[in-house]
Structure formats: structure tokens, C-alpha cells
Image 1 (tube, rainbow, N blue to C red):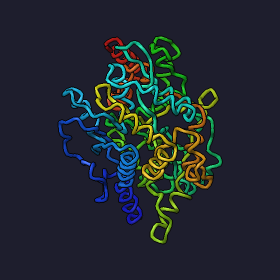
Image 2: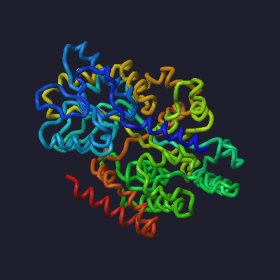
Image 3: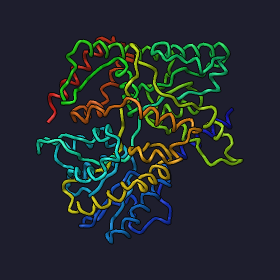
Image 4: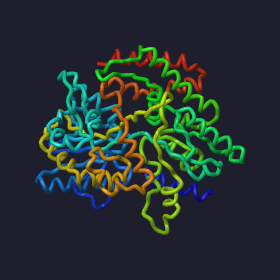
Length: 469
């Protein structure tokens, strides 16, 4: 058992360790050294979770250079610092020309569009508009408060949603059949609690039925909890950007969602250390089989085990194909499909750029279906799902024997919506300040009632929106 656990954890950190490019990278790759203060065309890019992602990006840039006769400087920046470095560069008046940050779609991009710091890329989007999923395009149609208009201020390259995962083999140890997992909302959650009770009775004292994040140390808590708000039909912002929290039905839905989510923890069905988890916390808990099920914003957990099929990777192959299961969410409490909140990966061009022509030329090259597919498939290894339905015809994505990617695509082809910060960037501050996570912690750590926590949370959100400029 210990050998299996160590193998899983090593694979997890191998997959998520921030990697550098290989020595075969083009000479224009500057790594993490500070860019020179010059007029060269500069691209800043999130350093990939896998070496292949960095290599694919560098290769696509080199290909564009050969085709266009132009040059670019690529700087790879660790994920945990790229947004802060970008904001500093903007303050110093020296931003890059092009930015891809794997975390910017929630907090950074909506604000920059609002402040007129991003270039309008509507002409570029319109060239590829017929290839895109319409909901994805809605997710990059931002308000510019200076120009007093909405437009496309970023280029979408991939999408993700929050999925549910569980261990099939551990469920079988509890004598439960996955075919009996309820589709009804309340019964669905009771099922995992029942499974924990049975496993505990059978001597497995170290397993928890629900690996749900409860901390304010990352993004997983609000990604998961917002799906609970969706389940209870809570509408926080309308498409005109107006707050809807004064609606009594929305207040009641927030209370119900907070009550249910925090009771999982208070009743002992969630690992106690979940109040301190960062975004890797639920991944590790699940991979160590401490949690029977979890929810995650990408397919990152199962894809740690998607390795080349050979005699050395039999354990991982078995885990990926047979023991780990990815599935969508249950029906809402009143019945009906729950809407999945899209996370859309985006690239932006800065309004201050002196190289908009080169920037749009490079992005036009990247958005060619064969190039974008190469980045998502070879670099991302399936963590990010294509935003162009045409790409899903590729056998990599259209593989019915893959038990995880096929489920993710089915979920993304169902009911989806953009996150609220698209309609009003003030909501990005609600997420940046982890308002929902803090409400959860106030209940489970400080003993606040869900009703009181809901009142305080609504007041904080209203304050943030009132102060937004």
C-alpha cells in the first residue's frame, strides 16, 4: 500500500512540478530572466506543468517566425508569479506585447479590459468566429469602461469545467455499485456519506467520503462551491452586470448551499485538513485514497496516470482506465441539469503594445486548428479541452474508450455559462478575496450560522460592487 501511495504522489508532483524547457528550445527563449527594456516583440507565457507544454509553445513560435520573417522573445514565468509580474510591468509602463497566464481569466483579464489596458481583438476573433463555441466567445466579450463599449478583448484557446471524480474499486470494497449512484441532488451526497460509514465499519478509519476543499488558500473552494450555488438556482449577476442579491430567492439559495456544504465538514465526512488545502490538496488526498470522491476544476487528477502503456506503467494504466472515474454533477434539488461554469483559457494583447501587428499575426497562426490542437493535445495532454468543436473530431478527443476526456467533453457540451466576472469585473474581486471561502470557514471554524454568514457575505459583495471603479 505504501509503495502504491509513494508512486502516486511522485507521479502527481512530476506532473505538476513547474518544469523548464529542454535544451533544444529556440534561442529566443529567455526563461525566467528579466526581459530587456527594448522594442522587441515580447511574449510572456505561463510556465507549463509539463516540459512538453513549454516545448510546444516554443516550437509554435519558431514556426511562426519562419513563416512571417519576424522575431519574438518568449519568456516563461512560473504560474504563481506571472499575474503579479504582469501587474508590475503594467505599472512600470513596460508590459509584454502578448500574455498567456493560465490563471488570469478569473481575476486579471476582466479588470484589465475594464481599464482599457487590453487591445480590442474583435477583428481577429471574427476571422475565426465560425470555428468557436458561442458560449466560449461570450466568456471573452468584456466591458471597457473607458471606451464605453463591449468587445472581444482576449483570444480563447481552451476551456474547462469542474468535474466529479471517485474511486470505483474503493466503492466496490464498500459493497456499493456505481450504477446505483443517485442522480437526485440530496441522495447523491448521501450516497458518499453512506459509503464512508460502511468503509469505517469495515475498519478503514482513514478514509473520507467527500474530498471537498474548505480553505481560502486557492481557487478550488469557490470553483466547487459555485456549483452548489448553481444547484440552488442562485443568480448573483445578470447579463447587464447588475447584482441580483436583493432577490429573496437568491438569499435563500445561498443559505441552503452554505448549510449543506459546511455540514459535510461538521458531520465528519470531509478530511479535517481540508480547511488548509491549497489547490493541490484535494488532488493529493484523492490520489492517496484518503478521499473516496472529490471535485476538481480540470482533468488534472486522472491525467497524472495517463502514461505510455508499457510494462512499467501497468499500475498507472489500470488506475486511469479502470479505477478512477470522472462524471458530471447530479441533477439540481428541484430536478433538471445543473449548469457548469466555464473556465476559459485566454491570450491577450496589451493596448500599450507597439507590436500589435506582430501579436495578431502570431495569434492568427496559433489559432489555426492544427496548431491549436497541437498545443492542447501535445502540450496540455488533455487538461484543457478545445474551444473549437472541429478539433473534437481528432481521435485524441473523440475516443469513446477514454473514460475521462469523453466525460469532460460531454459535460462541456451540456449546459454551460461564463463566470460572472465577464458581465461585471467587480465579481473578479469577490473571487480574488475568496469571499465564498471565508463564509464557509466562518461557519465551520468560528461557529457562525449559515444565515448570518449569508448576510455578511451579501453585504461584502454589495460593498465590492459599490466601490468598483
